[in-house]
Length: 175
Image 1 (cartoon, rainbow, N blue to C red):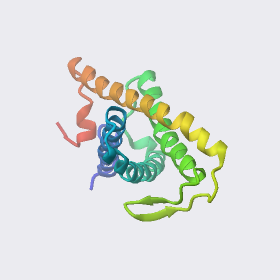
Image 2 (spheres, one colour):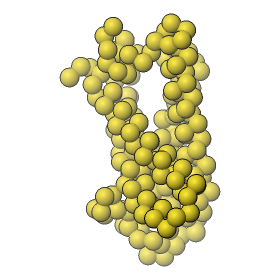
Image 3 (tube, helix red, strand yellow):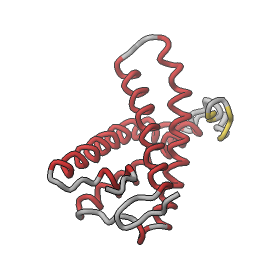
């Protein structure tokens, strides 16, 4: 297991990054299916979406704590724009599932279950401000997050084309 260094992200940082990437793919696919399909089976995706959303919430909290504990050891940002972009990503990665959980808690629809296991009790009656907050912000902020993720990926490609390949930092290659 390698630690973070000024040139490469260590094993834990890389694992958290790529686990979250897989979870984001699941979240994006379920959101796209909901928006493009009106079939009856689409409702069955809510449990999957909520389960992966909860996992993302746990992963981002762990990732923030890990990043804070290793701040001086990690590769530095290449620019102020990169630093701001990463801060925006972290903020939205925390905010989006948090708002989703607030909505779930106050929806009056019962507990939050992650792959069938109850992880959070819900209110028995609908709490309007909680439901409205989630309805108003969760989806919009999630789409903004996906746009930022697309920008993040695009900038990795731009860096590579400019001869400053940053991807090996997150792949663990020592080339």
